[in-house]
Length: 230
Length: 230
Image (cartoon, each protein chain N blue to C red):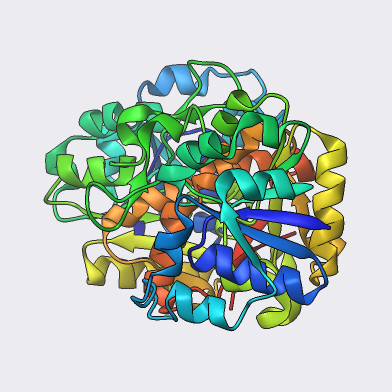
């Protein structure tokens, strides 16, 4: 499948690499190609800079947000939540029209210091996932994978034999079915793909972030995930 | 131990019953004793009315919020979140002074219809747990057990062999140690008692509620809980 990933940070890189390995054609979208290619500082987790990473991942295409959105049959929003709507505006509604738009971002607000809170207008009575669906009514938004570290998103078997859960939600059942198939390709077992219903469930999954950050602080790693035990 | 439970709803009843079975002396606190005893309508889950329940649980004492708080060496707030501060005011700061105050409530806002959202002033940049600690600085607030159905709170082995997690947080390590011992008495295993640090972690655990409600809607029961898989 032709897949566009908006955002060239560690989430975008991690997803791009694994999608490419599975045979998908991937284009990363960014605001400014030259600036992104020139990045030589380590990423915020001490991993390779974009230019280093890209040198080892030339199978991944790089374009503007608009190039990537035009290229992809499916578009993944892996930008920082605070930049998501801006990036999607640059991607362009015409390039997103009719497409499945998988939103893995979280509306984290770093402006008030650490730990981040959620951006108030996308919290409790709204969510970033809903806002994206409202802004792009002709796209089929599926909120997914935003409740875990990117290293697990397409590699669930890294911990606990993959026996932990991914939450998905969205208004379009067909779009969710396509995302479910994609998740299964990466090892998510059906009983661990948790469809929470329409896109308003994104309020719930985005509001997991504050406890997720506290758990990460307690266990000292992002390599954990939640499981619904019954 | 002498334990006060503020709130006579299904959470208060369930906790009272199990605490009494384990040999604790329990007093339930309510706003109006006569009114509570006169309740003959089924509870919101179709369970017995308070008067029916109480007829079978005479080992549990019943008093005003102030009676109960004065009685208990440890006080559990099991009121509805929207009434929590009012109930605690009636309990009285003198009766709560120096005591461990276990807050199991959630700041759910039912005023805008279903599903409930969180009360805005106790969400994202504050929490009910924090607000209670700020209001009663001489009490030792421990937020605990608020992320699950009351039927599991003191009966974790009901599902998944008890292999799921209870989150606790609070500013007083000794108070958390007492609560931890109490939890262990009811079958919570040490590796499933998750101390998230100071009381500000209550933001995270209270913000689990929206996704908890969606999961409940999906699985059709409250008999589930979250587990952190590593």
